[in-house]
Amino acid sequence: MGHILENSVYLELLRRGYKVHVGKVGDAEVDFIAINAEGQTYYLCLL
Image (cartoon, rainbow, N blue to C red; front, side, top):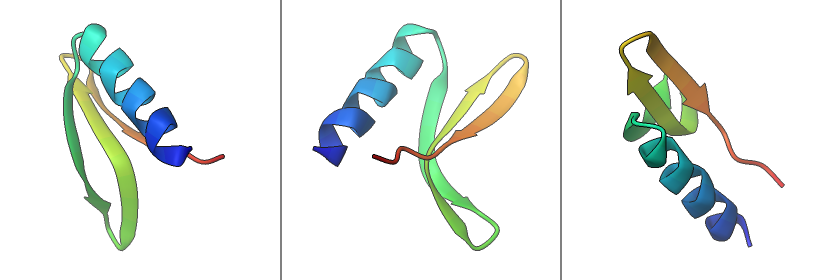
């Protein structure tokens, strides 16, 4: 079920015009790094 949530979040970020990457912040893994003209936001999808 977690992959469905992640896919929904990913598609919504794209719909809102973000460039979306997957990666790490320091030692922590994040599901998405969403980047737009205002900066970047980190997303972690949990159930």
